[in-house]
Image 1 (cartoon, rainbow, N blue to C red):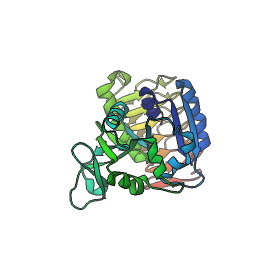
Image 2 (tube, helix red, strand yellow):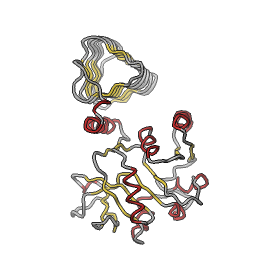
Image 3 (cartoon, one colour):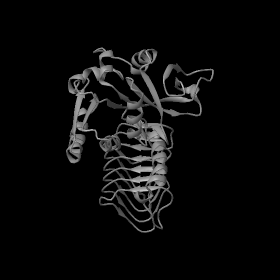
Length: 332
């Protein structure tokens, strides 16, 4: 979400509303402070009941300045891309209609809802999982909309994709812009790692100086500048992100993984294709691989081998795991 906020800030956005229902207080504390750092207002609009993808707009209508003629961006928080918001704003302003969707090209459109449009971007219709080819562009979950469209949405659970957008398209009020570069829905841990790989590859092309380099670095690696310690004879990469305050002891091997803030990886531990949550630890000679997802404050004991394991926060792992897709709710 901070990546999205940074991109919005760069195009002049001064007010951000978080439409949330889950862990709203934690998000508010973290992101309000970030807004203060940037000098912008970040506030929350809380859903007591799930309102779908459209209902939250009706809920937060009183927080939108409906007298201001500027359009507003609306984003799904779990997508990653290059966030071309300046280009999107220009495109939207030029066609002058009520809304613009960012769309992305996919290899197999039969798995998705396809956005069918004219060559100039006017959306004609939406086709869900077409059996016959009608196009290869799908909704990327990021929009720019004029404020009057909020009047289309009732104060009730509503789907933008099924209810609001088809009506706007039928009236000739909806356009699409094709997203340049990569795109990934990162709402699930496996998809998060895929999105991380794509984002690092994009950084390698656009901002290579932001990536780590050195004899112990292989491929694209991003290491926080904030108090990270790395021991001798480590090999890190490819496709690794290391968060702030992480301690990596001697001889550690990391591949295609995310090591979140405050973690400790003890000597000769190995992490591959996994996410290690905040303030967690991996013991000496332990192996964590094949889609392990460790919550906050999870501790893998020395010399353990775990694979395909999801561990809830504040747990400890004392035995090996060789099962597929196991979920741990307590200490094992």
